[in-house]
Length: 273
Image (tube, rainbow, N blue to C red):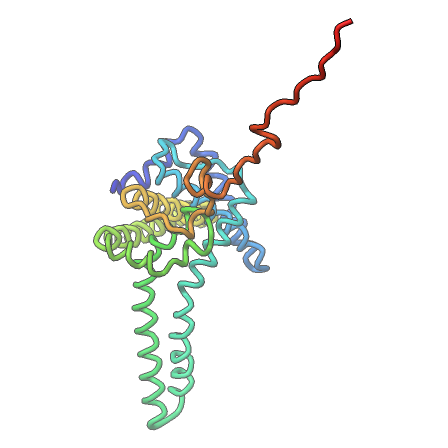
């Protein structure tokens, strides 16, 4: 794993300034339009762009930063990955229920207050623990999804769990590095934007968000390159290759020519004049 490369790869691209400017503009516009929920589409596009980056790093591309030339496809990729992450996050909703109930009961007095506080505390602890679990599982379901960009691939719970457990040490290191890097990038973006009379925050904050995305997906791509996710039947369309025994068995036998093996008819004898 080359953690520094997850940042320096950006400037190694010949057109990195244009690509970063486009990505920053998308995040800025999406943040503004999020008020009317349209902006979420821009974040889906950035997520889909990140999936392509992850695939390029996984495949060993020398300059993995993609072009912004697949807007519709990136939108679908990002939406599918969002659905995968949402399904993995559903237990958080269950853990949120005791927090809400406990918070309401905590306003009472006596035993109800104690029970409510206990429920809220237990629910909060479960949410924190599951949040840590999600941080560890995120590389697995993201890499699995990137194999064929199908939602079902990102929901192979048993396979993803086994892959994560097998490489748990490196995955934890990646999660910690990403956590520290995201904090530092956000801090630098905030400081630089503030020094530019606050107006710079309009640029530095979305720029920092984009760089954080790219850093994360590059790390995931390195994991996928070093520890390929096992191919499963769900990842591929089942077609028998031409020339395989199965294909030969299913191929119909050629029909025999009618009359094969019969002697040709004898031409009529012409009498001599």
